[in-house]
Length: 111
Image (cartoon, rainbow, N blue to C red; front, side):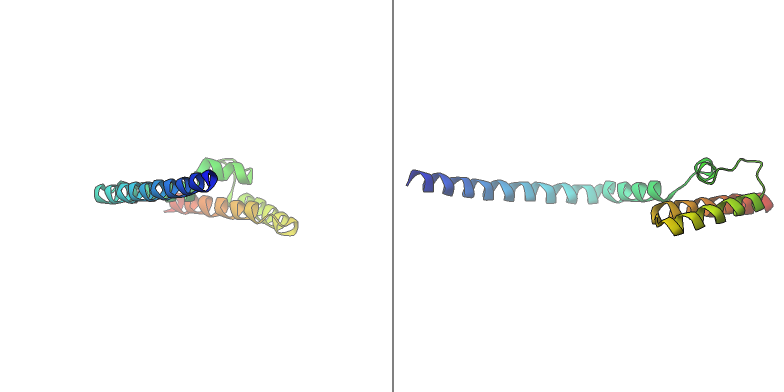
């Protein structure tokens, strides 16, 4: 009998605590949305995860600032092909993003 009573108390207590946590979380989201903090944070995280610096792109492809576009494309083709054969999609996508980043830099310099 005491075990049943104790189990009921634990279940009721956890239910009450769960509802309180849920309400506090919902209120925190409402406050964040009112001030715009939530959207700004999401935007910053999204930008940070997508942006690759020129230096990082050069390190991935193993080229220097003095490398010609032909050298960059040769490195890109070699690395992209190697990663497609070995099945590393993550590395293959990093190589592709590095080429895209350097392509943007080279196009800026031409304009």
